Amino acid sequence: MLQQTRVESVSPYFQRWMEHFPTIQKLADAPLQEVLGVWEGLGYYSRARNLHLAARQVMAQGVAIPSTSRELRRLPGVGRYTAGAIASIAFGENVAALDGNIRRVLARLFNVDLPARSPQGEARLWELAEKYLPEGAAGDYNQALMDLGATICTPRLPQCAVCPIKEFCQAFQLGIQEQRPVSLPKQSIPHYQVAAAVMQRGGRYLITQRLLKGLLGGLWEFPGGKQEPNETLPECLARELQEELGIQIKVGEPLNVYRHAYTHFRVTVHTFLCQWQEGTPEPQLIQVQDLVWTEPGELANYPMGKVDRQIASQLVLGIPARDTEI
Image (cartoon, rainbow, N blue to C red):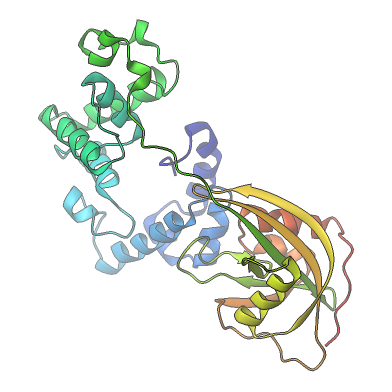
């Protein structure tokens, strides 16, 4: 939970998670939809899916959580940093960890002039993390560096005056601490226009479940997709529902517009009231995992990303919608 989010933001999610899943067995036994629902709002949903898979893998093997970094890395979603942090802090293994805080501390301390996120910079920082690892105290050492980076050696305006290791810090001695770590050149962030269908029948709305792999995998949404070049939003919506569900629709009046930023791109989502074309078949599971017609009051039972949760909340508040008859 903490890999991309601050502690104060994560705390309520962590408490809720532990109330629902106090043991590995509880997590392993839970259906994926419950797991995604408890995680909802944190983003990075592949992590919730991987935690669920890892719990099931551990329970299937009938053993405790692996205690070495090598064994931990065999679990779904566990990389070098996560394995090193768990193995050193929880099990006392003499192994390094390299999170964003430690990366920043080491880049300043040793004046690493390579981009920290480049393959060469990453290799250099791992080398430093392992070189100075104190035998028998790796867990304390890793946590100390994490805390130093989180509280003193911060990304902006580091508190060098009170830093306990400033006399060893090469970047501080050169007065270039705010120029370390070196960043890769920023790439332009793509911005996509997306159309989504609000379709009603008998007081129930159509929502579909995204395929389990990929962005927001396993979450529920109002069906639609990205606008292609030289395509209007209504044309986009008609094409997407034909491709995903095998249905033909009539796109009606526009509703609300929602804007959201993901890590590597932005979206503007346009919602439209939609109707089926007469004589077309029921929706099919072509490019979706599942679909359901649900009442507005039941939408909270289906885990969704932030944009679709906003749409659902608007519907609960009573956005006007036409009743669709086939």
